[in-house]
Image 1 (cartoon, rainbow, N blue to C red):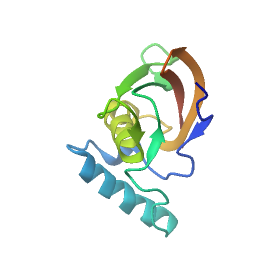
Image 2 (cartoon, rainbow, N blue to C red; image 1 turned 135 degrees about the vertical axis):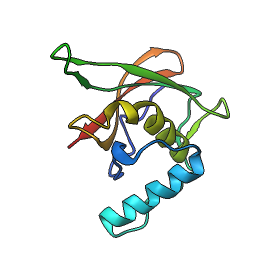
Image 3 (cartoon, rainbow, N blue to C red; image 1 turned 30 degrees about the horizontal axis):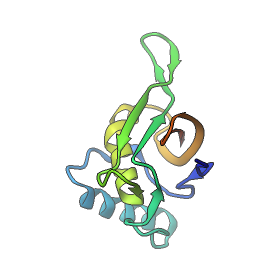
Image 4 (tube, rainbow, N blue to C red; image 1 turned 90 degrees about the vertical axis):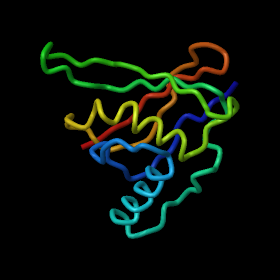
Length: 132
């Protein structure tokens, strides 16, 4: 299967925004944050399909100050409907699973996802792009 090379570019979000107990609260905060930063409405619908696979692996860079080295941990996510991810669902899951681990890092801003590889059928690996 051919996967998109880049996903969710030009989405303004900071992983410093704390944990969210539900997707609706997260989506509302994301839209507010985007409007505050850009002055425009959020450019996508939260229920739009963003990736038509039931699972995805997201890898990210994290500096380990104790070991004085970079780590490349990864998280696996499963679509709630076992078929595809929506914009809101994927961003919500990434934020809650990875955001807490990055909130004290220098690179706390979401800058999109970049396709890395296909680990197995229907299980793409994407790199989480972050900035400061």
